[in-house]
Image (cartoon, rainbow, N blue to C red; front, top):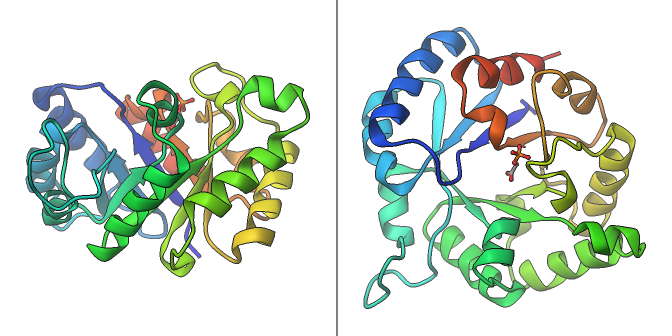
Length: 238
Ligand code: PGA
């Protein structure tokens, strides 16, 4: 399977900045056909990026959806709206869980809504530093999987293992730690693609992707610069 390299831009980039990134980035990766490249921008940039991408080798994803299709849900993005433009959607990112109080049961509803609307979810799981230090990493991840994936057809999802202590901190999990968790995740879920996330950069992608069960990366900070993100994409082919 081709590696999957996804950019999570979080709450960054105006439409102007987003389109300018895509113009540069398209050029940098235009020869690449054996990596599944996914960009997940802010909602306001989904349409302009969709238009700019045309039939390029780059896919589009949303960063979040609500589970209802339409109605009185101020501020939310419907799966119907996302699917007009995107193939993918990030669900259950630790920032959604932590800052916006999303729990496993809400995440389960969002995963169901994504699949019902033919969106491929990138389902994020991972433990906090406190949980890691208490030796609970695997218990936490197992609970997120069991509750998050209740009733879900796991053949149609991508999982991203993102230890919270490694997100935006510059502290990447070592390839061994990540590999151990990825193989644990596959023991529970079966053979799904599992991406690693948490301070992935051009300097560490090669050693991460060498691991047997690391199938790609979900990249935050280092995806905001076209050159740096294109280097990660290229590194994933090694
Ligand atoms: P980071 O973020 O690459 O900036 O650590 C990853 C993520 O939160 O998806």
